[in-house]
Length: 254
Ligand SMILES: Nc1ncnc2c1ncn2[C@@H]1O[C@H](COP(=O)(O)OP(=O)(O)O)[C@@H](O)[C@H]1O
Ligand SMILES: [Mg+2]
Image (cartoon, rainbow, N blue to C red; front, side):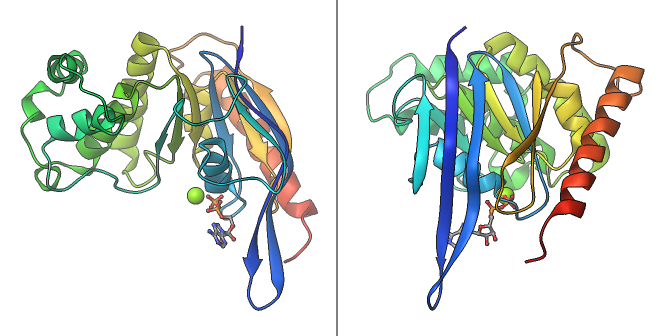
């Protein structure tokens, strides 16, 4: 299996006016194999979004290396930012198509492929709807399909279900798992929901409080779909929460 994403000893920080410096990623290392699903959990403000941005090539690390399929991230990554990222003036279909327009080349089959994608995953009835006509859950489904529609092998998803109510959220987790199982891309998901990470992932990476380092990596090898109430899910969830709590307790105040 080849390595889709490799962060080696990555350091990122930001200037803190007037003369300070805020370290955000501290010699952070993480490897994600092709076709794997890795979820990243960590305390709020620890550097999760920064980790995705540096992996997408939107930020340069001050030290260390970021490799996507052995080279620079450019052209290989689809990044879905936190929050509502649909274009409000375009329909659901138009939003899906936007993923390929950004590549700047003509793509005649795109329209048909986008319709097919919407219908394969239960959204054909909403193809002509505008974002303001859709529920929050439906908007996130469209934004997720758009990310899968980009011709990119590595998907970086920043808390895509974070703003949804609990019921919609579990529905979307099940739906997203089906999409991923059909389309098989490599996924790095940032989430603050540990159960979501356990239900969906091959590995869960636990980050320390800022500046973020990888403090633990949990391998979840039991088959999917996973029953939320099963002993495997519940014990993995407990172990991850424990690891988060320990790292918080050991963190220096800042
Ligand atoms: N462009 C930036 N300039 C200055 N500080 C930033 C910038 N981006 C993020 N930060 C700071 O880095 C820290 C980590 O942010 P972020 O990666 O968004 O955390 P998370 O996604 O885990 O909540 C925060 O303290 C945030 O204020
Ligand atoms: Mg964030």
